[in-house]
Each structure stands twice: as C-alpha cells, then as structure tokens.
Length: 81
Image (cartoon, rainbow, N blue to C red; front, side, top):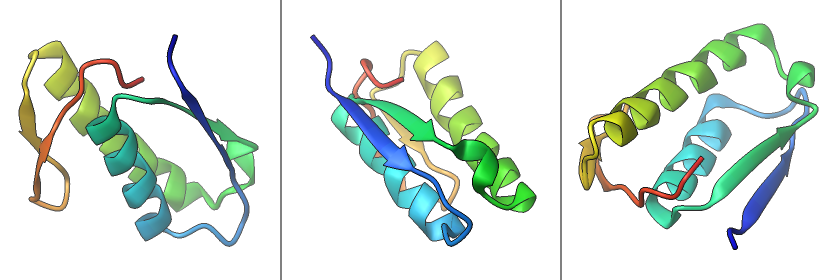
C-alpha cells in the first residue's frame, strides 16, 4: 500500500507551505491530498499548479532527479502522486 498525506488547506497557507509539502511528497514517494483546496487564495492555486507541473514532468520523463521550481535538485521517488 501507499501512505496518503492529508493537508487541510486554509486561507493562511502561503507558497512556502505548499512548496515544502510538494517537495516532501516528491522525495518520499507518498501520495498527497489537499483537503479544502478551494479555501486557499487564487494566486496560491497557480503556485501549486506550477509545482505539480514540475513534478509531473519529471515523472513522465522517468527521472531519478529533477530541478524543482526553486532551482534545487531533488531526488524523485516514482510512487508520488
């Protein structure tokens, strides 16, 4: 089985919070669920989509490492979703 990390979103979430969560999911190979995602501010949704796009591109290309949106090189566990 896979572990699922549930993040309860709120208006107080910032882009650094989303960035840390996305990095952790990609590096650990865990699945993530952003509960109440519609509660975050609209510009944060675009930041999250940008991070997800970076991870999904690396998964499609079957990379073991990839450059995250902050130019940091991360190892990628293929099971993340």
